[in-house]
Image 1 (tube, helix red, strand yellow):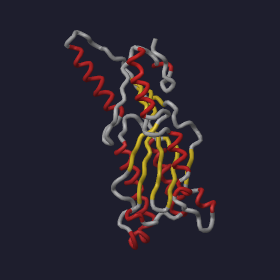
Image 2: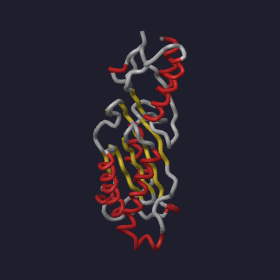
Image 3: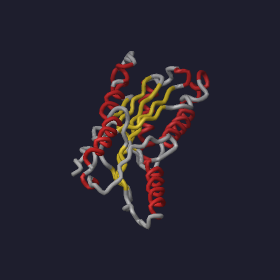
Length: 236
């Protein structure tokens, strides 16, 4: 009997499933890759007379080098990590961060999928200029929260520190990291130009660098998932 993995929900803990650990590009979504895998396998099996092999739905869970918990602790300690202590009012600096107390590894559902899809984003100010002072940072956090609400994303953690920003977001399984990053960056640039154009004319044409970091995370790490899948060769 196959041992039930603790990181999979009970309704898919079955021997009649394909489990795969796949690394995606920023331009790929879990949904598009899942559909492609299911479609290619189904096509290959039709030559053997096998049709309609798959059920309609699927389960997708993100993972990374470290877990959600580690990422959340890392984001929450950015001020200490960079020694970016407030000069006057510590309360203002605490407003430059957001923490969602809910479990970031929770499973969500769409019409045909159960999923958990968390992305850690890092955006840096051009030339690492310390443009994001506590007053700007506080307002930027609130603006990004409004963007997440409009996009139906879950904001788990946001922290803005002088010359860069960290965000851990739960996005939809049919969206790509690149789409989410560009939405955050482009909306932020319009917001900056609308409110701080005079200050920007002195130091920056655009606030954030065009490049970004995006990394997935989940309840289990990539190494744990890989170890579990390898163990199935001995138990299946």
